[in-house]
Image (tube, rainbow, N blue to C red; front, side, top):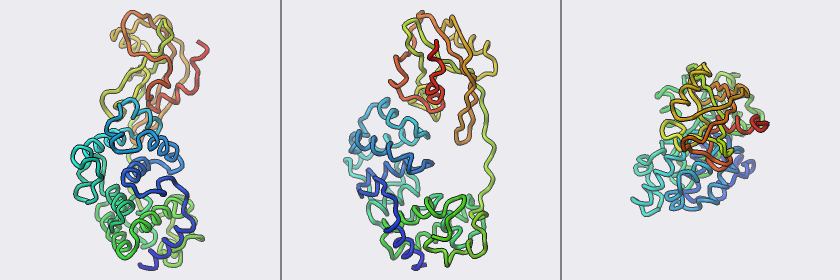
Length: 340
């Protein structure tokens, strides 16, 4: 096991990517990067991370920032509950710990949005403590290296891999080891087409020896995504301002949407909007758009429309003025309504 740790650390010191969060051991910055990196590739995160840190350089800034500004900083990253939980945690750290990031697992794990992996990453990278941090990249590397052929979604498999990782960490520099094994999984030991020939631990890898790279790790088949059908509208009033809806609940809370009604029928959707006080005087079909969430698919029949200024609705001069949900940003980006 010590050969594994030594080799990946040596490899990491030479081949690691130059990522902005690797130039600091500030736990606030490490935390921000780890939350952003959940379900998102590093290359995508970089500009968001830089803008976020420049705008909110301290945990006090994050605790105090207005919701619309916070959501605008996160706009496009998706999984918006992450940033809402970050602000709740920032507020708690400021009030309970005077803005000083907790450095114990017991305290970190109690904070909103911080699970076992994130707590371990903060403790090992920022505080140099010997805590395992095991994410999808790490599980893939360890499963292949040790030849673990059981389903990685099972608790028993996760516990086995966690035990391996903690043992590998014990006698090494925890910050270097944690980043090295994550980097190995992200760049060489990838899900598809792993680069085994240049891997620093290829000689002892069970999956490579048995030709099982494509079947390890074993993971249960995901459930089919639920599909919803919407009639979605780009509506302008008589002052040429756009109607927007702010979401107050569910996974898109704090973001803005175009007006939309879940239905296969345009006439039904127009009746619903009319009952809400939107007097629509003109509609024109634009196109159909589809947006895929983690467990959900939205199919949207999009229309452009004009409404009368009979009732005060929330409107914006430009969609850039508010944090729009990604599902609708794609629609707006097309500028298909410009001809109207």
